[in-house]
Amino acid sequence: MKIGAQLYTLHDFTKTLEDFEETLKKVAEIGFKYVQVSGTCEFEAEWLKEKLEKYGLKCVLTHTAPQKLFEDAKKVCDDHTVFDCDYIGLGGMPRLWNFDEFTSDEVVDKFVEEYLPIMETFKENGKYMMYHNHHYEFARMKNGNFMWDELAKRIPADLMGFTLDTYWIQFGGKNPVKEIKKLAGRLPCVHFKDYEIVRGPKDEAVRYAPVGSGNLDWDEIIPACEEAGVKYVLIEQDNCFGKDPFECLKSSFEFLKSKGLEVE
Image 1 (cartoon, rainbow, N blue to C red):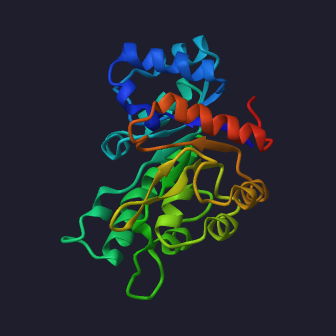
Image 2: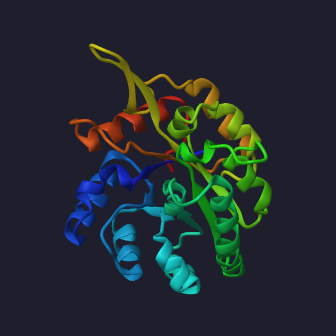
């Protein structure tokens, strides 16, 4: 498995094209060869191709705005071909977070209905839809199933994979290793994000942490990913809580290198 950087970790440093390029440079200097492009400013496909080549990076996955997928899925595929990326990711579905308007069943029904044609377009153009989870997908449906399992059941494996996020799986009350094994073959890319317990004066809380510094069992998660066919492990930390995000990425990178994961 190869180590990559999920650039959403650095979203405060990619708000302009100039800053975005500088961020790519710094990521490459840490030692990364692979990135996921997410949470950045707008860019042209040719611009990204040029900058990736300049700094010796490859984009293996994106998170692409839903409106772009609905407006012209073919163009999205063409743009990804320009910068040589086969996995087109959805960072989540906004409808999922609107609890007042939609039930869990309605969310799944509408997602399958609306996105299957887009997935078909991706497949026809040599691309693959990747769905990224939070904890919301572990709400139950009327039939007793978790939404997460229902999505995997209703959508063919050749049309959609899952960018499984280790933190959100744990936060959702599930076991990352079990979920990884369950989705073997549908996980070309995963998000490695640690889960830290923070004690306060009145209660306990959890928060994101550099990989290897929290409570997740990486000695079980890493082999499970290898057995499940994961190609790219993308380090993500949504919030670094005052620490330098570049240093947090570097810490995670060095930890995973020490565990034998590949850099190139």
